[in-house]
Image 1 (cartoon, rainbow, N blue to C red):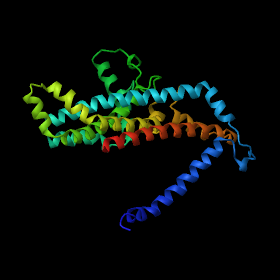
Image 2: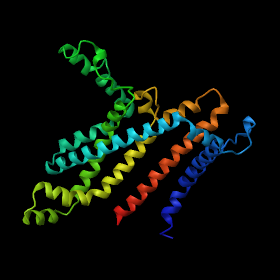
Image 3: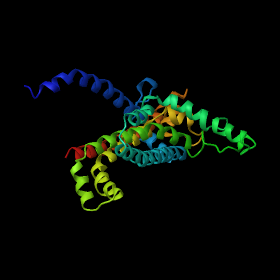
Image 4: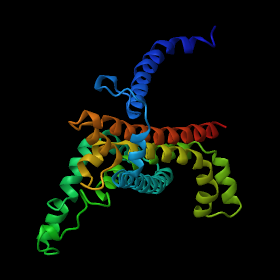
Length: 281
Protein backbone atom coordinates (compact mmCIF):
# COMPACT_ATOMS: atom_id res chain seq x y z
CA UNK A 1 0.00 0.00 0.00
CA UNK A 2 2.86 2.36 0.83
CA UNK A 3 4.27 1.87 -2.67
CA UNK A 4 0.93 2.84 -4.20
CA UNK A 5 0.26 5.86 -1.97
CA UNK A 6 2.29 8.38 -4.08
CA UNK A 7 0.41 7.30 -7.21
CA UNK A 8 -2.94 7.53 -5.42
CA UNK A 9 -2.13 11.07 -4.28
CA UNK A 10 -1.18 12.04 -7.84
CA UNK A 11 -4.27 10.41 -9.35
CA UNK A 12 -6.70 13.41 -9.17
CA UNK A 13 -4.19 15.79 -10.77
CA UNK A 14 -3.15 13.18 -13.34
CA UNK A 15 -6.75 12.47 -14.34
CA UNK A 16 -7.46 16.18 -14.74
CA UNK A 17 -4.39 16.65 -16.97
CA UNK A 18 -5.10 13.52 -19.00
CA UNK A 19 -8.73 14.48 -19.60
CA UNK A 20 -8.12 18.16 -20.44
CA UNK A 21 -4.91 17.76 -22.43
CA UNK A 22 -6.01 14.47 -23.96
CA UNK A 23 -9.26 16.01 -25.21
CA UNK A 24 -7.38 18.94 -26.71
CA UNK A 25 -4.81 16.71 -28.42
CA UNK A 26 -7.47 14.38 -29.87
CA UNK A 27 -9.58 17.33 -31.02
CA UNK A 28 -6.55 18.95 -32.64
CA UNK A 29 -5.55 15.77 -34.48
CA UNK A 30 -9.12 15.24 -35.73
CA UNK A 31 -9.29 18.83 -36.97
CA UNK A 32 -5.93 18.41 -38.72
CA UNK A 33 -7.49 15.44 -40.53
CA UNK A 34 -10.35 17.64 -41.71
CA UNK A 35 -12.94 16.26 -39.29
CA UNK A 36 -14.99 19.27 -38.14
CA UNK A 37 -18.71 18.31 -38.01
CA UNK A 38 -19.69 21.82 -36.87
CA UNK A 39 -18.59 23.09 -40.31
CA UNK A 40 -20.03 20.16 -42.21
CA UNK A 41 -16.58 18.57 -42.67
CA UNK A 42 -17.03 14.91 -41.71
CA UNK A 43 -14.57 13.21 -44.04
CA UNK A 44 -11.19 12.19 -42.59
CA UNK A 45 -8.39 13.09 -45.00
CA UNK A 46 -4.64 13.63 -45.05
CA UNK A 47 -4.81 16.28 -47.75
CA UNK A 48 -3.98 19.09 -45.33
CA UNK A 49 -0.73 17.37 -44.39
CA UNK A 50 0.00 16.87 -48.08
CA UNK A 51 -0.64 20.57 -48.73
CA UNK A 52 1.51 21.42 -45.74
CA UNK A 53 4.63 19.65 -46.99
CA UNK A 54 4.09 21.00 -50.51
CA UNK A 55 3.90 24.55 -49.14
CA UNK A 56 7.24 26.30 -49.52
CA UNK A 57 6.38 28.78 -46.74
CA UNK A 58 5.89 25.94 -44.26
CA UNK A 59 9.28 24.44 -45.15
CA UNK A 60 10.97 27.82 -44.76
CA UNK A 61 9.24 28.38 -41.41
CA UNK A 62 10.27 24.93 -40.18
CA UNK A 63 13.89 25.44 -41.23
CA UNK A 64 13.93 28.94 -39.73
CA UNK A 65 12.65 27.64 -36.36
CA UNK A 66 15.12 24.75 -36.38
CA UNK A 67 17.98 27.09 -37.31
CA UNK A 68 17.34 29.72 -34.62
CA UNK A 69 16.68 27.06 -31.96
CA UNK A 70 19.77 25.05 -32.86
CA UNK A 71 22.12 28.05 -33.04
CA UNK A 72 20.86 29.55 -29.76
CA UNK A 73 21.00 26.16 -27.99
CA UNK A 74 24.55 25.36 -29.15
CA UNK A 75 25.84 28.83 -28.23
CA UNK A 76 24.04 28.68 -24.89
CA UNK A 77 25.66 25.35 -24.04
CA UNK A 78 29.16 26.49 -25.03
CA UNK A 79 28.98 29.82 -23.18
CA UNK A 80 26.99 28.38 -20.25
CA UNK A 81 29.51 25.59 -19.63
CA UNK A 82 32.38 28.10 -19.83
CA UNK A 83 30.69 30.39 -17.28
CA UNK A 84 29.91 27.41 -15.03
CA UNK A 85 33.60 26.47 -15.07
CA UNK A 86 34.61 30.01 -14.12
CA UNK A 87 32.08 30.00 -11.25
CA UNK A 88 33.40 26.61 -10.19
CA UNK A 89 36.98 27.89 -10.05
CA UNK A 90 36.03 31.21 -8.41
CA UNK A 91 33.24 30.43 -5.98
CA UNK A 92 31.32 33.53 -4.90
CA UNK A 93 27.77 34.12 -3.68
CA UNK A 94 27.67 37.36 -5.64
CA UNK A 95 28.60 35.59 -8.88
CA UNK A 96 25.92 32.96 -8.28
CA UNK A 97 23.35 35.69 -7.70
CA UNK A 98 24.33 37.61 -10.85
CA UNK A 99 24.10 34.53 -13.07
CA UNK A 100 20.60 33.78 -11.73
CA UNK A 101 19.21 37.29 -12.34
CA UNK A 102 18.44 36.85 -16.08
CA UNK A 103 16.35 33.77 -15.20
CA UNK A 104 13.96 35.95 -13.20
CA UNK A 105 13.21 38.37 -16.04
CA UNK A 106 10.24 37.28 -18.25
CA UNK A 107 10.84 36.82 -21.98
CA UNK A 108 8.48 39.68 -22.85
CA UNK A 109 10.65 42.06 -20.78
CA UNK A 110 13.79 40.65 -22.41
CA UNK A 111 12.26 41.43 -25.82
CA UNK A 112 11.78 45.11 -24.93
CA UNK A 113 15.31 45.30 -23.50
CA UNK A 114 16.75 43.88 -26.72
CA UNK A 115 14.62 46.24 -28.81
CA UNK A 116 15.90 49.24 -26.86
CA UNK A 117 19.53 48.12 -27.18
CA UNK A 118 19.95 46.42 -30.55
CA UNK A 119 17.34 48.03 -32.81
CA UNK A 120 18.36 50.61 -35.41
CA UNK A 121 17.02 53.32 -33.09
CA UNK A 122 18.43 51.68 -29.96
CA UNK A 123 21.16 52.69 -27.56
CA UNK A 124 24.06 51.11 -29.47
CA UNK A 125 23.15 52.82 -32.77
CA UNK A 126 22.71 56.16 -30.96
CA UNK A 127 26.10 55.86 -29.26
CA UNK A 128 27.74 54.98 -32.58
CA UNK A 129 25.97 57.92 -34.21
CA UNK A 130 27.17 60.31 -31.49
CA UNK A 131 30.71 59.00 -31.94
CA UNK A 132 30.40 59.62 -35.72
CA UNK A 133 30.89 55.91 -36.40
CA UNK A 134 27.68 56.00 -38.45
CA UNK A 135 26.07 59.05 -40.06
CA UNK A 136 22.53 57.69 -40.01
CA UNK A 137 20.61 55.19 -37.88
CA UNK A 138 19.81 53.17 -41.00
CA UNK A 139 23.53 52.40 -41.39
CA UNK A 140 23.38 50.33 -38.20
CA UNK A 141 23.05 46.62 -39.11
CA UNK A 142 19.55 45.21 -38.91
CA UNK A 143 19.59 42.89 -35.89
CA UNK A 144 15.88 42.98 -35.05
CA UNK A 145 13.16 41.54 -37.31
CA UNK A 146 15.94 40.40 -39.65
CA UNK A 147 15.71 37.39 -41.95
CA UNK A 148 18.48 35.56 -40.05
CA UNK A 149 16.74 35.70 -36.67
CA UNK A 150 19.66 37.38 -34.89
CA UNK A 151 17.36 39.22 -32.47
CA UNK A 152 15.58 35.95 -31.63
CA UNK A 153 18.89 34.20 -30.92
CA UNK A 154 20.03 37.06 -28.66
CA UNK A 155 16.79 36.85 -26.67
CA UNK A 156 17.13 33.10 -26.22
CA UNK A 157 20.78 33.43 -25.17
CA UNK A 158 19.74 35.86 -22.42
CA UNK A 159 17.69 33.17 -20.67
CA UNK A 160 19.33 29.95 -21.80
CA UNK A 161 22.97 30.70 -20.93
CA UNK A 162 22.21 31.14 -17.19
CA UNK A 163 20.05 27.99 -17.27
CA UNK A 164 22.91 25.87 -18.66
CA UNK A 165 25.44 27.56 -16.37
CA UNK A 166 23.41 26.87 -13.21
CA UNK A 167 22.82 23.19 -14.04
CA UNK A 168 26.44 22.59 -15.07
CA UNK A 169 27.77 24.45 -12.03
CA UNK A 170 25.76 22.21 -9.68
CA UNK A 171 27.10 19.11 -11.44
CA UNK A 172 30.69 20.35 -11.23
CA UNK A 173 30.31 20.99 -7.51
CA UNK A 174 29.17 17.41 -6.95
CA UNK A 175 32.13 15.81 -8.74
CA UNK A 176 34.41 13.91 -6.40
CA UNK A 177 37.42 16.12 -5.67
CA UNK A 178 39.66 13.05 -5.40
CA UNK A 179 39.56 12.73 -9.21
CA UNK A 180 40.98 16.23 -9.59
CA UNK A 181 43.62 15.72 -6.89
CA UNK A 182 44.74 12.45 -8.51
CA UNK A 183 44.94 14.14 -11.93
CA UNK A 184 47.06 16.98 -10.53
CA UNK A 185 49.40 14.49 -8.88
CA UNK A 186 49.82 12.79 -12.25
CA UNK A 187 50.82 16.12 -13.81
CA UNK A 188 47.56 17.12 -15.53
CA UNK A 189 47.11 20.85 -16.19
CA UNK A 190 43.86 22.84 -15.85
CA UNK A 191 42.88 22.29 -19.47
CA UNK A 192 43.38 18.54 -19.22
CA UNK A 193 41.43 18.35 -15.95
CA UNK A 194 38.55 20.19 -17.59
CA UNK A 195 38.54 18.23 -20.86
CA UNK A 196 39.34 14.78 -19.47
CA UNK A 197 37.52 14.80 -16.10
CA UNK A 198 35.05 17.64 -15.54
CA UNK A 199 33.53 17.79 -19.03
CA UNK A 200 33.00 14.01 -19.49
CA UNK A 201 31.41 13.70 -16.04
CA UNK A 202 29.08 16.61 -16.85
CA UNK A 203 28.33 15.50 -20.41
CA UNK A 204 24.97 13.81 -19.75
CA UNK A 205 23.59 16.80 -17.85
CA UNK A 206 24.85 19.16 -20.55
CA UNK A 207 23.08 17.10 -23.23
CA UNK A 208 19.90 17.14 -21.14
CA UNK A 209 20.14 20.92 -20.80
CA UNK A 210 20.60 21.25 -24.55
CA UNK A 211 17.47 19.21 -25.27
CA UNK A 212 15.40 21.23 -22.79
CA UNK A 213 16.38 24.64 -24.15
CA UNK A 214 16.11 23.43 -27.77
CA UNK A 215 12.57 22.16 -27.18
CA UNK A 216 11.62 25.40 -25.45
CA UNK A 217 13.03 27.72 -28.09
CA UNK A 218 11.60 25.62 -30.94
CA UNK A 219 8.07 25.88 -29.55
CA UNK A 220 8.26 29.44 -28.18
CA UNK A 221 5.88 32.01 -29.64
CA UNK A 222 6.29 35.46 -28.10
CA UNK A 223 9.99 36.03 -28.91
CA UNK A 224 9.85 35.16 -32.65
CA UNK A 225 6.49 36.95 -32.93
CA UNK A 226 7.95 40.23 -31.65
CA UNK A 227 11.56 39.96 -32.88
CA UNK A 228 11.22 37.74 -35.94
CA UNK A 229 11.08 38.73 -39.61
CA UNK A 230 7.98 39.08 -41.73
CA UNK A 231 9.22 36.21 -43.89
CA UNK A 232 10.00 33.50 -43.08
CA UNK A 233 7.95 33.31 -39.91
CA UNK A 234 8.84 30.96 -37.08
CA UNK A 235 6.67 27.83 -37.11
CA UNK A 236 4.69 28.68 -33.91
CA UNK A 237 3.99 32.16 -35.30
CA UNK A 238 2.82 30.73 -38.63
CA UNK A 239 0.55 28.28 -36.76
CA UNK A 240 -0.97 31.13 -34.74
CA UNK A 241 -1.61 33.29 -37.81
CA UNK A 242 -3.20 30.40 -39.70
CA UNK A 243 -5.34 29.51 -36.69
CA UNK A 244 -6.45 33.14 -36.24
CA UNK A 245 -7.61 33.37 -39.86
CA UNK A 246 -11.21 34.49 -40.34
CA UNK A 247 -11.67 31.59 -42.75
CA UNK A 248 -12.71 28.71 -40.48
CA UNK A 249 -12.20 26.23 -43.32
CA UNK A 250 -8.48 27.02 -42.99
CA UNK A 251 -8.51 25.63 -39.44
CA UNK A 252 -7.46 22.05 -40.43
CA UNK A 253 -4.34 23.46 -42.12
CA UNK A 254 -3.45 25.37 -38.94
CA UNK A 255 -4.03 22.29 -36.80
CA UNK A 256 -1.83 20.23 -39.12
CA UNK A 257 1.00 22.70 -38.44
CA UNK A 258 0.37 22.40 -34.69
CA UNK A 259 0.39 18.60 -34.94
CA UNK A 260 3.75 18.61 -36.73
CA UNK A 261 5.09 21.05 -34.15
CA UNK A 262 3.85 18.83 -31.32
CA UNK A 263 5.30 15.71 -32.95
CA UNK A 264 8.76 17.27 -33.19
CA UNK A 265 8.50 18.38 -29.54
CA UNK A 266 7.47 14.84 -28.61
CA UNK A 267 10.53 13.42 -30.36
CA UNK A 268 12.73 15.85 -28.43
CA UNK A 269 11.01 14.81 -25.19
CA UNK A 270 11.75 11.14 -25.94
CA UNK A 271 15.44 11.97 -26.42
CA UNK A 272 15.34 13.95 -23.17
CA UNK A 273 13.82 10.96 -21.33
CA UNK A 274 16.50 8.64 -22.70
CA UNK A 275 19.21 11.11 -21.71
CA UNK A 276 17.68 11.54 -18.24
CA UNK A 277 17.59 7.78 -17.64
CA UNK A 278 21.23 7.47 -18.70
CA UNK A 279 22.11 10.28 -16.27
CA UNK A 280 20.46 8.37 -13.41
CA UNK A 281 22.55 5.29 -14.24
